[in-house]
Image (cartoon, rainbow, N blue to C red; front, side, top):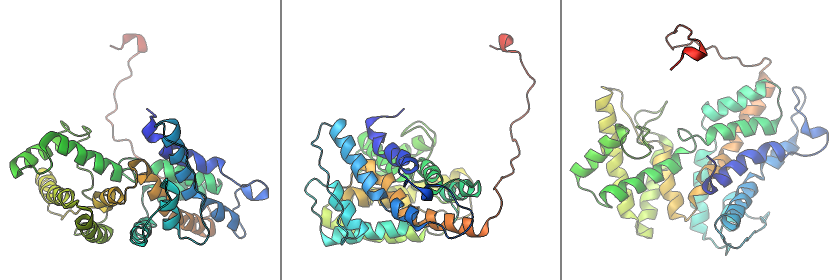
Length: 317
């Protein structure tokens, strides 16, 4: 169900297909030099996300509608902080950290949203549709939406067992999460595990280092300590339950939400910020697909469900 909290994410998602230039450049091209104008227009994604959030804050939260135009001489990170804050104020340290976060999220080889972008590109569709498809994938809670899920999970933990639970209480609650009896009932501890990384996610290592430094300055060490405990105990529990011998690690989402929170970035913008960063990678993959791909992707699937006999509609219970 679409709620006020989902408006910026959905607006960013919907914005990419309709935010297209007029004229001959709007069509897809499978040959020749890809139009530069498309990439220039997609660079306005931070503005789309910031204005969508401002509209949500005004129309759903009853706040004043405050819009700041981007400044060409500022970096992407500086403009984002400037546009989303009513007073347009930020520090160089905040801009540097957000810039680091955007860089770490900009590209990550073949992942779900990138595959969607490349698969749609192989069909001959236009840039905006391919990017919209990638955003639709990214917003899923197992992909780019996981950073917000992490923060929701930790709020739930604090509400039920406190800010500094003892080991027994934390273990019991993590068991309830894994059993689908607590949290969002998905049976997942968000922020743990990765499809490729086992020993460590290099992005998470960098983010955790900066999170530790910022937590001390912001008085949020208790939040960091709880995350570290969940990381350690959660990994042990998941590996034990799955009888898994392959190492498991925290992923990029575990600590990124904490950094955004300490930067006072609203949770509604976590996934749009991910999309703002990753759009550089999506465009690069799209250009590569245009240059080297010459056929539509058609993945092969095999049905895994057990075939059941057909039951007429009027005979079903």
